[in-house]
Amino acid sequence: MRQPAAPASSASNPRAAGPGGPVWSRLQSCASRALRHQLLRLLLSAALAVAGLEACRRRAPDDADPPAKEAGGDVRVVLAMQPLWGPAEPFRSLLREFERAHPGVAVEVRTLPNASDLTYQAFLTAFGGGAREPDVFVLDVVWLAGFARAGWLESLGDDTLLRGTFLPSAVDAAVWQARTWAIPWFVDVGLLYRRTDLVPDAPATFAELEDSARAAMATRPGLQGFLWQGRQYEGLTCNALEAIWGHGGEGGAPGRLTLNSPEAIAGLTWLRHTVASGLSPPSTTSAAEEEARRGFQQGGAVFMRNWPYAWAQLQAEGSPVRGKVGVSALPTLSGAPGHGALGGWLLGLNPRSLQERREASRALLAHLTSKEAAVVLAVHYARLPAREDAYSDPRVTGAVPFLASLKPLVSAARARPVTPYYSLLADAVQGSFSSAVTGVAAPREALDEGQRLADALMGAPP
Image (cartoon, rainbow, N blue to C red; front, side, top):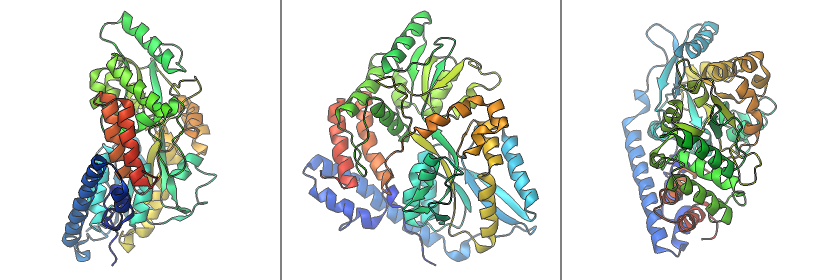
């Protein structure tokens, strides 16, 4: 049986990264010795990943695959997913409903790391080694092009399959090269959270955010102004792009990520200013979503940038800020509603899944992406529905009315660059973003270097 190739998006495609490949050719054309050195280090990591995947293939022959049925005779379907961060029972009930409707089928849930980059590496090893499990699995929206190109996703149909049922932005995240490769499970968008007891009205501009935060900080010693995700990882990519968009940056022409424009420099200058001026704590440059969420939930900050999942935790019984939190669009320089980064998770099928599991796997995929499932995820886990019809469901509007209000923000969300080489691109530019927000390099200098790396990887003239 043909083994799937390693995904180009993970920098582990030897044809792309090795001599004679497109990335290698662009590397040789770069004039900067430092740039060549940095890219060579990235490509060396890709080569090591390929070597590791080949070893996994040798250790995972087809005859070592697990049986399709358990001793009791049930067909076992393996679902791999990350924690939903909420009460366990509603999701368990959703799975029991599926099993009742499909006698003889048992669903086994395997929990993935909460950190997106760790989950990606787990899939890199499993699928690169030809694993037949999991049968159904979650994937970040930025992985789809790379997974599809690698042969790690079963094609579900053409690009019209989901339109009219799911949000257009969610559909676009599930489609690559006119084929549908996954079904949207829930979507994400970057949001601004605020303490409504300290700041009743949402700030429209960066200046209003800072003024409101400092006024509140002056009344409560130890209170932080603005928490966000500044650690060198994918969350920083989203925060940096949102700041760039908020200062008028458009991201450049299709196929090119523009990083060294005046608007981009202004956006990274703002992020650096928040830390350097004390508006954001020094720990921001090592913070991810949960660090920010915990600090805000403990009552330690006026504002926070985070994803919708945080809402359920903030409003949970016993939360110090329960009933004191508002959500709005991110601020901008002009005062127009800001564009949050489009995020979220899709559900896909493993094309190497055992034949005996295929029908049950497809049924589970349909069940978990149904309207009923979307309502469960919204009401109990504050996950933004990917389906159009869930936003008007009375159970959603009654229990979590804020989700319905976020539909315009999801519609205005902007995608990160869509490319099979996304992981390699993100690794390259995150260093530049981190240099800027930590003060290691001036924003202009950091973004100039990031632009050279992005152009070399995406094919624009260096």
